[in-house]
Amino acid sequence: MSPDLLPGAGAPLVAVSLTWREASSAMRARANAPMDATLYAALRAHGVEGLVEVHTCARSLWLVATPQAPWVGALLQSSVAARAGGDVLPTVYEGVTAARHALRVALGLDSYVQGESDIGGQFLAAFDAARAAGHSAVTLNLLQQSAARVLAEGRESGFVRPNRGLGQLAVMSLLERGVDLTVPIAVVGAGAIGGRVVASLRRAGAVAPVLYNRTPRLDTLPLEQVARGGHAAAVVCTAGPARWFRPHADLRHVVDLGLPPQVEDGPGVIGLDALLAGDPLRLPDERLRAAEDAVEREIGGLLARVRTIHWQRGLAGASTLRDHFMDQELDLLLADALVALSEDQQRKVRTATRGALRQYSHRMLTWIKQELAVPEENG
Image (tube, rainbow, N blue to C red; front, side):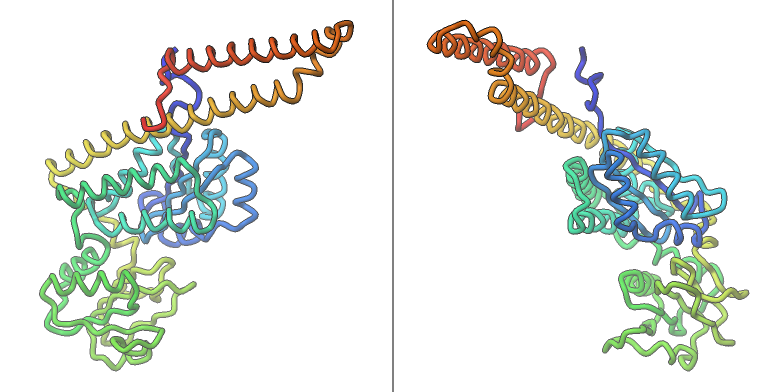
């Protein structure tokens, strides 16, 4: 039997994906609420070994380590769909396909701006957060290591493009609407996304933007001063629970990068749904092929490492079962057959039986390793 056909030889992994393609920003905001302890405990009861949640402005991705992929995938898909509401049905990937999709997400190949560098950092940070919450698992740790390797290759080879992402997309949208870059643009929210917007404005040749933030900082102004800033355009990068930003009369163009939406509807407001409605910004063909080749190479290595763990666990379990049988059950099973023998004869029979069983189990495990190509520890 080929090891590729053995149970568990693939990747015990499920990916449930909800992106801007399937659901509006409001639906995604409902779906990506942090998973509470009750739901996670229910998933654990159904065979989930670990869970990583990757949430960005354009997507939510749940990565689950489980040997019960079809059942767990359907269960999580149903839970996400119920939270999102409407007719949304998240996409489910299983096994090797799930691992491949996860690496493509990390490289930005599934992003609106292909090869964006922002998603890679968010992807790896989600694994760190899962580990801190006690939600990690061996398969997920191996997947994170694979993602880190392809991201490093992508930065070196150029198919992961620095300074590409949602910030650049927001600035492009303002430029398409004829916004004057010689007039300071307001950036509301000084977090990670706000920083990317500022960097994108600088690369576009805009004058220094003015930063506003809810929490006082030396390099920002209070939010209530936005209306007095004389801005004709703004990019809002906050993450409040509901719409709170009301553009004043002179603010003719507002890009809302919030999830859920942060800006009250109006004629000059550009939300995430509108921002992501055009044609994706693709990588050049040569770099796209290089990225896809890197994913396939890494998938092969990831499967080998997952298979190694699977076999090592299986062999360790077989050895433990053998030892338990001989230590706890063998004497009881032999008791009736040995009752008529002397103590010395009983001891000899038990010793001989244990020796024979150990030889048998040793030969059986050796055969499994050799005939079914069980990887060694360093494989």
